[in-house]
Image (cartoon, rainbow, N blue to C red):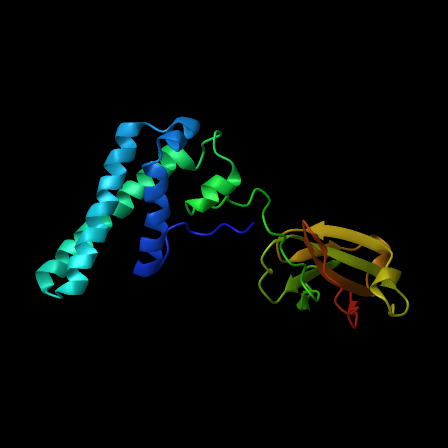
Length: 217
């Protein structure tokens, strides 16, 4: 279940939730079953009553003084509810999920939502330099999608361009750009082909198209 804040964003919603709280806070059987301390229940209930009373007064006579009194009572009541929830409800093994949800406390996710796998492979560019013979640098030209843990490269030094990345004979995994390929002594002047894909904990993206090829210096 997706975690939801247990304090409503509207004042009407807050008053409705407080009504449920007041029912349980004044229920001596619930206090015993849940292990709540009666004195703390009474103190919390008093703050809720004070806010509801101040709100009713303001609704009847809308003066600045009554508004300020209502807002101060609201802040005090919310602080009391948060304190009581953290102390007596959220981690209370004597209360089941339904009993907590009745008071607006919804359980947090225990399993994180899966990160979507990127729908396409990385865009990239290649760099070679005559003063660095045998070296090919492959740069990704876009930011890693959220959740990416590495980049996989498929590659090969071939006579003709592969049509499918799966036809490229070798694999390499890297985490930072650039990925550097250092050729074998007999590969100078030959053509290097590659394709890339993002890798997440949920799986890998499709491969990027096989590169047009670069002559190894």
